[in-house]
Length: 386
Picture (tube, rainbow, N blue to C red):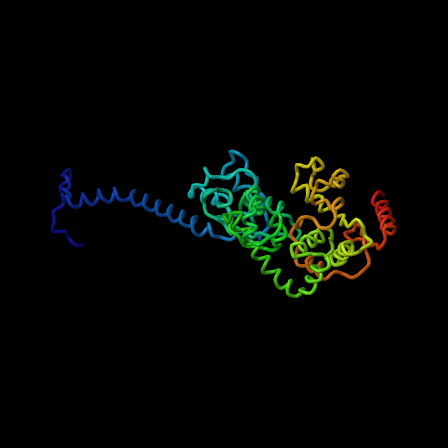
């Protein structure tokens, strides 16, 4: 076996001293070990935070766009909100959502009350919806045919685009209506039913301009195609396009079935044209209801729930939209009609009907005489009472 040239220390003799440089290196390694661990932990935390802020925040939601209403109570925190979003099928990994919210400082900015989200939103978009000041979110806003500006204002408030009061004020502001070329008491009728992609910080005026712009674009081909009908309505009944929209909005509300729109439009036009039909009142319940939305302070409208029309409401001549007491068309549209209802007014069914009554199955019975109409009313009231 090889023999070392260095003599071994005798038993009990001390080891030779370690050089200073070696001792210093050993101490440095001892100090570096925990620092390396801490650095690794910090790096892992930073990587995790980066993943949450970038990758996780941008992941598509688990759903297909279903609207979910979230009620956020006073004092409710991120953990509870994340749990309920997950329970509603709008969120995966609620713990990650909670941490993301804390990283972005959402806890002190949480909204209160009703908040609408879609189950297809990313975690980042959900966070911006439940907390203020974390950026805007693109929303898909659908306006159904026939919806009123009052109903739309409530929907916009629930989406957080603007308050109900802001939209109602903007849609009836005389200077804005004049700028948009709308000759009526409000923008009702010009808030075109469609699906829009809007930012939730759009505000009332910006959104209103966009809706009216879309309406003009969609109405123009219809006006050109039915130029002769518009000229005839102007000559015979002194109706302009604003009044066409008013009648179309009534047709939209009265006709549940699309196929009946031209028939119902024909009934109302027959009433306006016939020299024998007097007084020339359209007698449409939806106009009375709309008048109570516009002038809710009327005594006859007190307690109106948005559905049930009372005899007191029908008898009130102070309601400017009451077509049971006032001849002709109301002051303006009572909702926002779709193209089908407008076309029904411009190309109505030709018949001699002057009356109609609901069957109770979404369809109507049409009559040419008051006697036949009263018989139909009695018949279907009797059926309804069974």
